[in-house]
Length: 184
Image 1 (cartoon, rainbow, N blue to C red):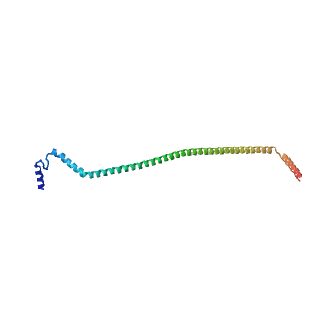
Image 2 (tube, rainbow, N blue to C red):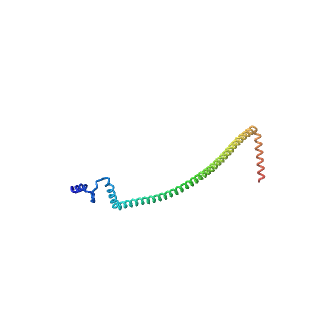
C-alpha cells in the first residue's frame, strides 16, 4: 500500500510536457474531473436513470389511471346517490301530499261522525224531553182525575141518601130487566 501512495506522490512531480499525470492545480483540474465523472455517470448511469425514470413515469401513469377510474366510480356513485335522493324526495313529497290528504279526509270524517253523534244526541234529548213531558202530563191528568173522582164521590156521598140510593138501584134494575127481555 505504501508503494501505491508513493507512486501518487511521485506522480505529482512529473513534468507536464507530453506525459500523463496528475495536475495538482485545483482550479484547472475540477472542471475536467467533473466533466469526466459526469461523462462516466451519464454513460453508465444512463440506463439506470432511464429505467428509474420509466418506472417512475409508469407509476405516475398508473396512479393517474387509478385516480381516473376512482373519479369515474365516484361520479357514478354520486349520480346514483343523486338519483336515490331525487326518488326519496319524490316519495317524501308524495307521502306529505298523501299524509295531508289523509289528514284532511280524517278531519272531514271526524267532523261528519261528530255531527252525526251530535244529531243523535239532540234526537235523544228531544225524545227524552217529549217522554218526560208526556209522563208529567199523564201524572197531572191522573192527579186531576183522582181529585175529580174524589170530589164526585164526596159530592155523591153527601147528596146520596138511602132513599135516592134505592130509587137509583131500582131504576137500574128495571133498565137491565128491559134489556134482558129485548135480547131474549
